[in-house]
Length: 143
Length: 143
Image 1 (cartoon, one colour):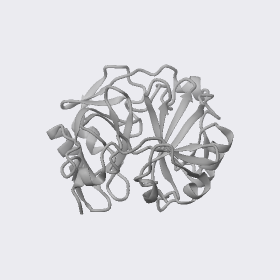
Image 2: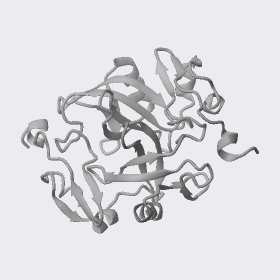
Image 3: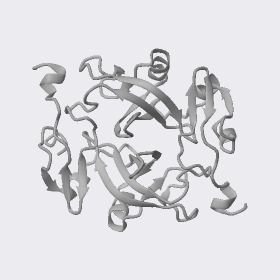
Image 4: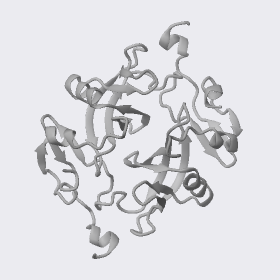
């Protein structure tokens, strides 16, 4: 399926359903999904989807992942209020990774930062390059 | 290690070596690495790194992945000439994903496209949204 599209011209259209069926899920039935803010290009986070999460995301237009720690669907923002509206979804050349362009409400990261990639290498150091915008208490309520 | 940094202020610095040692490699000893063109924000590809690939990337400033199919280090561009210069490297909040900002020479994708995410969902269809810039023959030589 994906191999056949490798040499395809721009604008080539095929049915989506067989492509989703041909995704190369890992041994846990998951594929990685990169979330990118659609207008700024900021990479917000990477999480995982199973088939059910992907189907729900496409159907609802709201991004739903699969939480490996909770072993359950993870409707982004359901607890924190910081959801992701799906703008577009793309599959990579070999059908094992997704790129979601989204419109993120507030912080994408559970730490309260806009994105998860705030630990940046700088020579022999690791530097935190952003402060939380909101505290986890603000996001999830006091424990 | 990463948990301790969750509430840290911007500018907090710690040593890099213990952070690299604390990365959460998967059961195959790999972490996913997202490559993003540093100036345009385009997400180019996602691949995997083992510890050796990560160390080489940081040391050389040229991106080196680990090829799961070839079970070997994959010095991006070594065969195709289309390499990635590392601009910055960041680790996510829970230490299991890398974001590489890179300067990509030519196409990042083995199909000859600039990026790997050219199969885009559009309603019930999948649409190829970019044509190859170069043919695989141009990249890898005629078979």
